[in-house]
Image 1 (cartoon, rainbow, N blue to C red):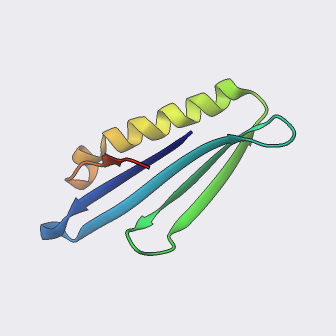
Image 2 (cartoon, one colour):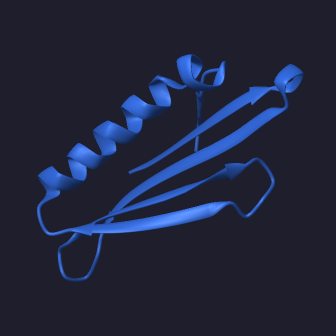
Length: 83
């Protein structure tokens, strides 16, 4: 599963990119990979592995909730990009 969001507000110089990728590795663990940063840059990345897919689902839900609260935090909302 792959999800991609962007938050853009030219007046406030906001150009953020966030990508979430959920896969299964060769050992059956669920891997959640996140990439974020300013649009057009390499940004940062984080990879977490979970033996229990429910733990991975909780992380994904918290990430989605955090992206949904962006308007309150940064003044503009993240919009989902079709991948």
